[in-house]
Length: 249
Image (cartoon, rainbow, N blue to C red; front, side, top):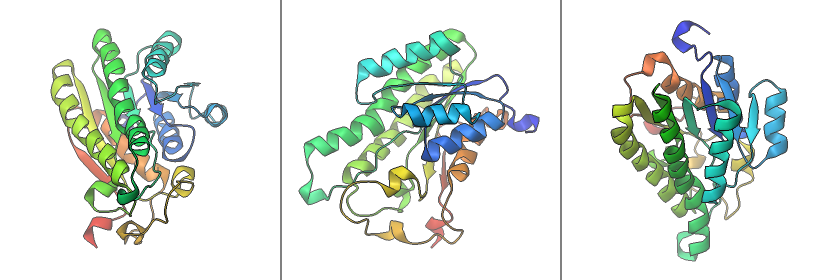
């Protein structure tokens, strides 16, 4: 890629990079020259990305467990160095109708989609600050926040709204260290996670076909790449929705 998109030598840590949107993000970052490390519980899937050249390694972690996250971040630092880019992509999309909602479902969704990114930002930002070279953090929320949703997503939507709010707080506190924090809102993508999501049938406007078509993982990855490039060095606390034009219909 041209110099404007060149991430040669930059270490990128991508959560949920073993499949779906995360795999697309890893592939595009690697094409831009980044040294990508995957943090995922799916070891076979992550290894496949390594063998395909989309990552240089992976670390297993349980995103519902704080000790596992802290240990995984330390392992990445020992084996590969300090990440310059953190992409909080991993997430659960399981559905549960609001009136049938359980605290257990709420807790699990929010643990993975909101609490884990908070812990990862805390741990990785500390390392970025110690390295003294600034850095980039990109959080993948959801286009559901701008209307592309279905029934059964109370916990999911709340977790992604929390993640978007975390972006603002982190962007403010980390700006003095040269670390930018931004949000991507992925539209509908036919990933294994989306197709295999548990719960009631997905009924709602999120099923409407966007005028530009259904997104692919690389479409979402393109927005992540932009936030990581030299062109976005002064861009922080911003949001890009990659939704195929859903919001204009």
